[in-house]
Image 1 (tube, rainbow, N blue to C red):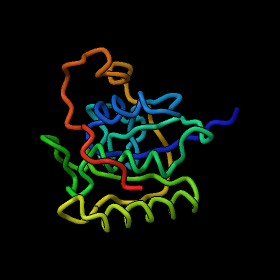
Image 2 (cartoon, one colour; image 1 turned 135 degrees about the vertical axis):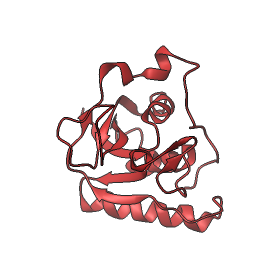
Image 3 (cartoon, one colour; image 1 turned 60 degrees about the vertical axis):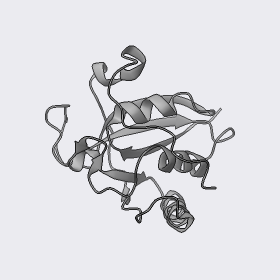
Amino acid sequence: MTYSKAYFAGGCFWGIEDLFRLRKGIIDSEVGYMGGKTEFPTYHNHEGHAEGIELTYDPEITSFEEILDYFFRIHNPTTLNRQGNDHGSSYRSVIFFQNQIEKQSAQEIIDIVDQSGKWQDKVVTSIEPFVKFWPAEPEHQNYLTRYPNGYTCHFERFETFL
């Protein structure tokens, strides 16, 4: 069986991981840092990186487009460098593409989300090439599983855009 990976960021990584880990077709998730230049980033030193997620999924059960559809339903893609109480570039909305097909799919989903009118403002999610995923420290993995009443600003806001 061949699995695929998807990479993106949309605010604090705890909430995104918590919602995605239970989705049909998601095999594994890991939170970490992406999109910055700091080598070996940590929670207290990840300047330039976004708090992101690496999803391992079964493309025979769910598609990259379905994953992105859900991504746009569980965070606010119209706020620049902010989700809930969290603000700064660490909390930006980004899709990290691995190939031109993912890049095109990401733009198509953004267009669909914008055209839906469900969000009052336009999507500010950036589409950036995937370079490297740096796993976060163990205490950040599956955080809301271990601390069910921990902080999150992620929740399902809409039905599917697709």
